[in-house]
Amino acid sequence: MNAQLFNLESRLDELENEINTQYCELDTNLDALKSNRIELESQLEKFESSLTNRLQGSISNNCRNDLLNLGYTHSQVDCMSDEEVYAALDKIDEEIHNTDQDYSTGFEDLEKQIIEMKRDYFIDRKERGSGNFDEAWEGEILDLEFEYTVLCLEKGLEPLNYIITWEG
Image (tube, rainbow, N blue to C red; front, side, top):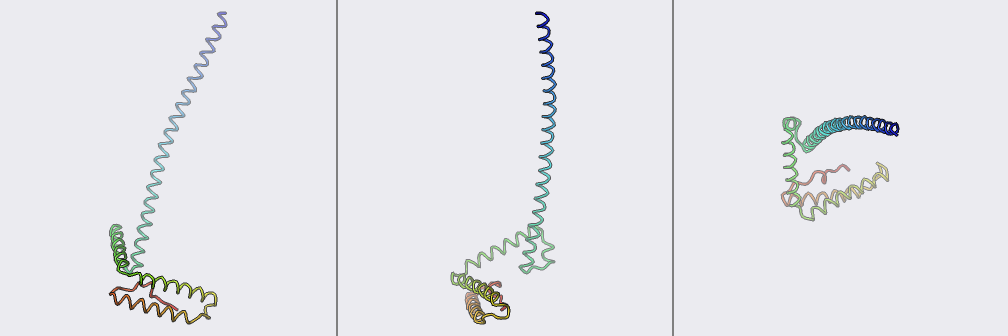
């Protein structure tokens, strides 16, 4: 019986050593996982920062291009900081908003009608071929544009370029 008890105690010691060894391995693996997590979080922060910088540059470039498209010169835009570019666009947006509020629904209706007629005209022209289009479209659109321009001038407002630009 003492031999069996001794064998059981030996086996218990072996199991205890195995458990301690596995515990140490798990502890080491857990430390490695924590270290990997910290490294991944650091890389994620760097990636997010890089992405933000790229997007910011892209947004800044797009805003600068918008100013160029709105009539600013390259020299004007090049010397502006990003904040000045954004401020200029905000000012333009505010002016457009104020101008939009000055337009009556008659203006908006005329603008929509002109745009829709131009769209229909070009669809009609495309379907008939570039050389064969109904010249009546041209007259109707020009009449509407004239009416729109007169309304703008009567109110002392500047007609919107995309409405009155016509290449028939």
